Length: 637
Ligand SMILES: Cc1cc2nc3c(=O)[nH]c(=O)nc-3n(C[C@H](O)[C@H](O)[C@H](O)COP(=O)(O)OP(=O)(O)OC[C@H]3O[C@@H](n4cnc5c(N)ncnc54)[C@H](O)[C@@H]3O)c2cc1C
Image 1 (cartoon, rainbow, N blue to C red):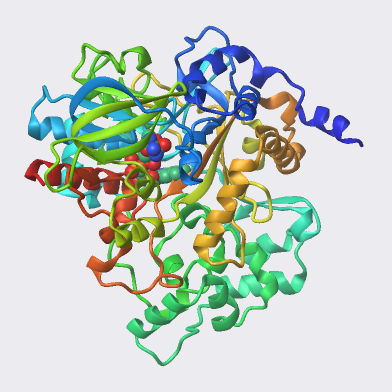
Image 2 (tube, protein in one colour):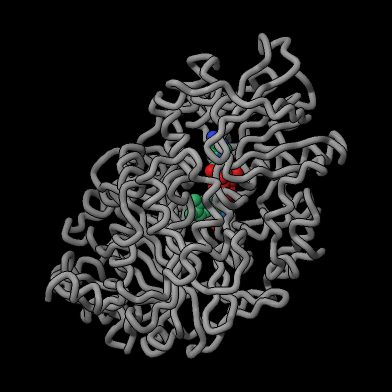
């Protein structure tokens, strides 16, 4: 079959994802002002609305390439490459003066605005700048409209993880916003999928044959593995690792065992400690993708032991006989999930800052509230959020110790502009900060560059029904050798007027995870290489792989990508999770020597927030860092 024929079979020619094409483009043109023509052309190809009748200014309803959308990063990359200022005109002075200018409109930047208003007064003049066409940073909302029905999903930040462990400050923010975590015990249907299990998809490139095997983790291992295309010897080895409760580290204390697990990867643990044949590794390789964005070659065995899978898709083999006892902190259930993930928290923050943007009053009504993006940046308002605006400079108007202002320059619609702030919070990425403030001390810049954010692809595919999953009796699929290493039915949450599609014949959103890692390299190197891959790949490459993989996994239960896919959104997070330190690759610093601490040091009227500043990829970290940054500024220089 030639490529064209194959593409037609996959449905690559279906117009559904490109309908109402120009709407999608119009909404994001601002982001492209400074972009090159090739970037514009790729944006035109990659982004679209999937249904007619929506306001052009409705970013969550855009499909195609989202997350870090094409065009949103060109200015920042020119800054990084040292080409931005070549021949640049002086910034246009907008004459706007604010009490606070925030760079970055993610949870941290929005929280910084929230804290400033809380402690410095509601009439404080605040501007938030963000380079994207939507607010929330990773906490982004994806909307689909299929067969007249609204389907929501989290473009990035998924859930409020372990809310009882949130700091007092972060808990108070949630409370102020009206989020009551106990609501999720009712909203999240913990029974709906109870009878649906996990499958593993063995692909022919890795395992010699395409085969989907259901019953992973729920049928005895020998029985489950017997159905796989893996050789008998490999099946027996994997069964042994799960079933034989051996103490592979005999004769040493629990503390010594933990110390040893910290020094080896999970792959080494399996082969060197459990003495498994290396042929078992491809089966386990992607277990760590979701939490660490790399495979088992680059995650310590200790980190695997301490971080069981949130989705309940798999368990790490080999730890049961080590007699390590129960981990002290019992995990809370992974149910604190708004239908659009933590985008609802971002939307609640925006509601508290500019109520007319997100109408309503409760955590329930925010789910279906339609945001009015036209009201984010009104001259009459003391609180403004300016999208499609990439900051390029944050500079004191004199020596940092005595300057009264910070001048923040940014590019919007191709124009270089300037605003003035009495103080400034950089709630963007650590690695961006040295380019915004080149006069920072060298040691601080070096520390900021240490953080290499972890790249992820969160793909959402709207399908016309989920009968194929129902027929297989599954809700999720691990696919260790495939382009996306994990696929699952969306979280079963109904909240407010939003009803989750509980029947198999209803349309559904599938979540698919890809981590573009490069096994064998050091962890941060894998992230760098993965990011290049993400930025270089066109939407059509993702789309072809998605359609092909879904067909290969599900066709035997009647699924047909060409017929059953209604829309695709690829959320590309080239700068995803904050880098978290790991015992395999990072030195054991004293707490105050960690790069995140050295890097976030206050610099006159500029403070640094964002989850990178905590080296912790969680919503609560983003909130806590915003609080610290604002407290620094309120205390003064
Ligand atoms: C795919 C994914 C899933 C996640 N899931 C969870 C989860 O389930 N639970 C959880 O607690 N955490 C999760 N996280 C972690 C998440 O990063 C944090 O929860 C938090 O949202 C980070 O917020 P932030 O504001 O610090 O950073 P970001 O969300 O990254 O926001 C920073 C913003 O600054 C913008 N920016 C950068 N440079 C500039 C510039 N020069 N000018 C203007 N704007 C700029 C960025 O584009 C971005 O919009 C997830 C992260 C990812 C990537």
